[in-house]
Length: 265
Image (cartoon, rainbow, N blue to C red):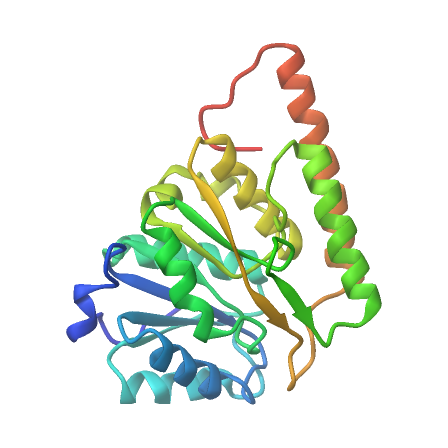
């Protein structure tokens, strides 16, 4: 693992009411998308810095990230040794943000599904919240160019999460988010093993159980135009299994009066 330039420049003043913001963008084979999404982020929120967490992409994504970082001191790179998964990339990004003194971290896909132009809405909401979810399923949210089976999986999956875990949030699997640093400092990442859908659900649940304020704001989620989707049946199966186990464990703990103080499922 290596890191790019140290944070600097006028963006250190941060986003008004939020502070220093780091956008973490995990990548694996996103050579066609990375430069585009980085440019859109910088134009949308000039006060934000960017950390590209690349899983040793064979298509040269890491080299593109290095070039962008060399051209702009507000872009940084984590080179990870191999394809270790979305959750692991975000955990490393969170730790990097904590170590480098940021106040908030944004999760964002590299493929353009999460529009950087909507990021100011999420950051504005973060002024009075501990975590913000860009929601496809709250009133005003929508998806564009999704095949019907993706739509069904997401809607049914989020309904199951609400019922199994007793959370009120409409889009617990959504990956466009803002976390304040105190939330991330509370979570014991050594015990986080989830990836994909279940990683987002686990962080939502841990944040909820720890008593932090989570708000949802509507976003438009657009299916990627370039490259291959990372969604797979194994990711869906993992999420279903983990949510079921967490739900059963939560009911058991409630029955026997156990109380979790470490923000763990």
